[in-house]
Length: 211
Image (cartoon, rainbow, N blue to C red; front, side, top):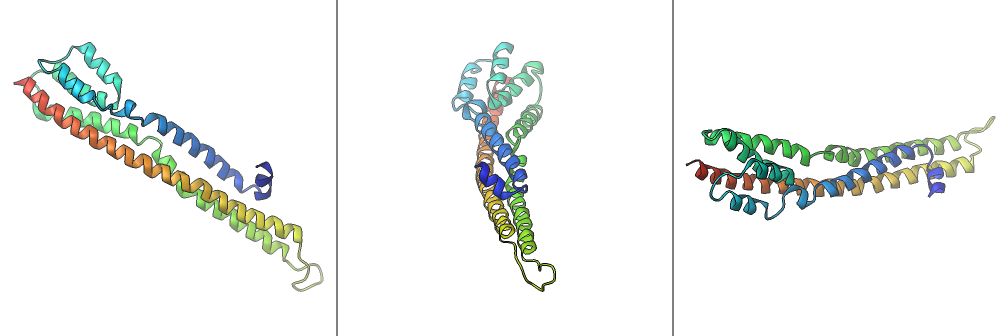
């Protein structure tokens, strides 16, 4: 591996940094976007069951808020009604939507950076390719006293190595980054839809408790 890095020359170092960052971001998102941390399947039903005959206690609401991202959204509705029993449906909806926007920002965390790496890696590979081509043309430069004569085979081989290795490594970094970015983007969108539908169900439930 180290011999490949040496053959690719200095342009590959930014790509190595991008690969490490991309791997770290992917691992972080895989851990953070687990269903148990975002939207446990049975959480809404449990919350509705607990509050079937009245608002839950503040301690229960706090536990719900700390459970997951969906729990944070549901807890915001309960907290709003506990603090202001006479609040309107519009106020409850605004509270739920505000919490939902904060949760949405957490779901999108680091996705912009991953998308940037996916876009920049091929360009960095192209930069390495251009630098390698410059070395190739330099190796074909005319020697002293000759027109178009004398090439340098070692420099020619080095230029080809720089060009090909950087092109390949740029694609190796960009393709998985793009795949994971699309995967995380679709997962975040699915979570947002789940939380939006859950918030609507909770809002109807809270309206019945207010009456």
